Image 1 (cartoon, helix red, strand yellow):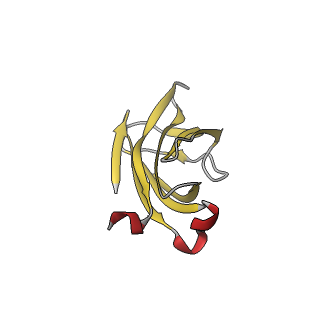
Image 2 (tube, helix red, strand yellow):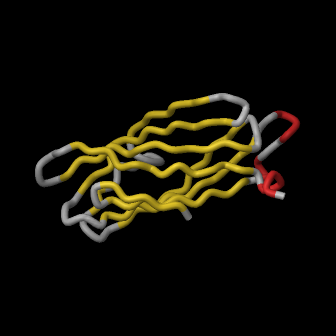
Length: 128
């Protein structure tokens, strides 16, 4: 699991290749990732949007922006956490993702970014 903290918000990521949803002949490689967001600060914050940079070994770069995460905009009080599972498909067996969440502090409405650490997307058979 890869972890990074920004402004008291800790983001941990674990990724797994999903061969049952992949098809190498069609250049379709599917990965699932689980993210845990932990509020280790002294203030309540809400996740309002996300930004992803997705890089594929064939040279493609995609940017994805959207509200919340998997349809939610969780509010995290101090000590609270939120986790979710999502997925990404690539055209090659290797790539990586990184990005940030845009969050807002409850007490002063300050908007800030929380970094999502870079994590690799690598099909298991490429690790041998």
